[in-house]
Image 1 (tube, helix red, strand yellow):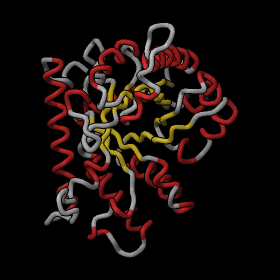
Image 2 (image 1 turned 45 degrees about the horizontal axis):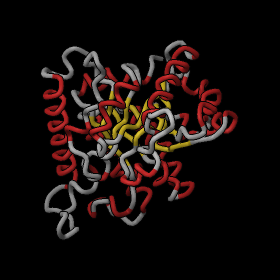
Image 3 (image 1 turned 30 degrees about the vertical axis):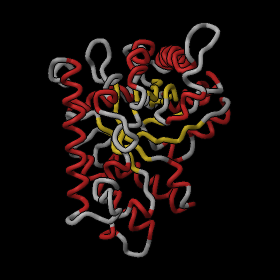
Length: 305
């Protein structure tokens, strides 16, 4: 199997999209039309409808594991089903799990069905490179471990923007480490496994330097676009590498799957079919991100990939 980055680039070009649909289900994310009284089955129906929308418009989806864990055993079964359904529809799947531990424990994490069934998984890098041995076998099957480098939450500056004795900020040091880890994993998996980086859309001034430090061959996952306040221009800064290749993906979750059909002022459902509102939101996000990418590159962002 080819690397996740290669598969993602091909999928982005095929769909002409760098958008990732986040799938973080709760009862509040469920349109009334899907509420049949059985939360798990109702969510399954809505999630499948979302996957069908996504499959025609975006390359990848991202479930956040916490929302599924909160529903217990049934929720974890729902997550495993979701990953299988996404793959059947031709979508890549990034699992947002932020795992972090020493090698043996990371190897155990990698055997969890919801992690082993994903194409990529986020992790917390603050234990250093100890995660690599445990995830090498997982990565060698074409998976990507995505490191927290510069996250989108406003509290990130408490740690990630703090200076080190070297003169680098913490996130800059983490970007350098991530680039080195990617090189190591590429070498040890014959180019099949890779390491990616989270670079938040809410820190656009830092994103350019982040991409430079990461290099041309590290995938970036950009949260914070849409509901968290990040704009399209900032969201796409780390998407292309220095050669103009698409090596980044931009996530939007509730902005697509809940806020699209919910009136902001009244918090009541908008008139009409909620799925049509989701389609409109995805199409609008794609158009906005592609316009920002075109402006950044000065050409069709998918033409030379």
